[in-house]
Length: 282
Image (cartoon, rainbow, N blue to C red; front, side, top):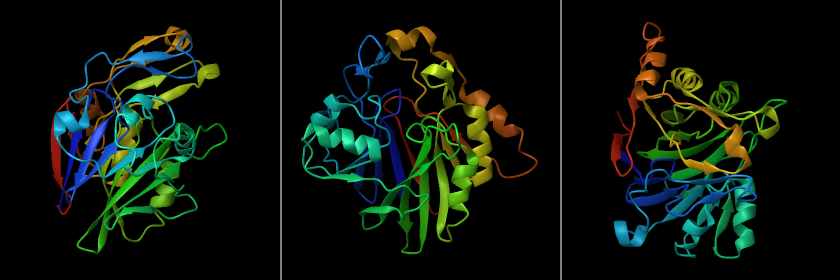
């Protein structure tokens, strides 16, 4: 069975297709995103998304929506309201609360925390859960992993870990080591390291060094970059935000450090509008 991922913008909006079931992940396809107030943090896409209207541009019907975080570059109200209100939406705890306040979507389900719950079925062969980062100074609503799992031949679950900001390896491995029927085959995590002063959240995106270590530890077969768009920013946060840009070549160099120890995962940078299809049985 194959899994197709289509990058809908230059940031972190994806269309995931498995067995003709279509999932929209963190869609932000037009307009700006504002956190709290526009003078605090406002961002716009530097590159126009390849898709701005799902029905018009793709001529498909979405079966489910997954929202990984409550922040508006992931949970973008204008984009979501442009979609049918009857599409079931699966969102992490804070994002689900935010979406319910809109009183728009008819079916809003909270993604369970996998540290103490099981994954939630969204289709007969697809399920989802969220792994929170643990730690005294951790920000679990920011740093964590959305785990989307796909059942192959009614036997083995093959999982995609979506980690747009980062998550400590120990938190993920603690959950993964308890699983007897899960194979993590895809890591969807960016290359760039992004950070603020500690009073504005500190380290936001962990970058390719940490992602490479995680990819090796989990023995993933594919690492796909995401959430690395250099967006047009304004407001207070933009005065302090720092970004260290890393390319796919930089990520390859990080992986090369482990070439004598284990199999190196395939590394992919999927451009805005492009797709990749992965055979989950390989």
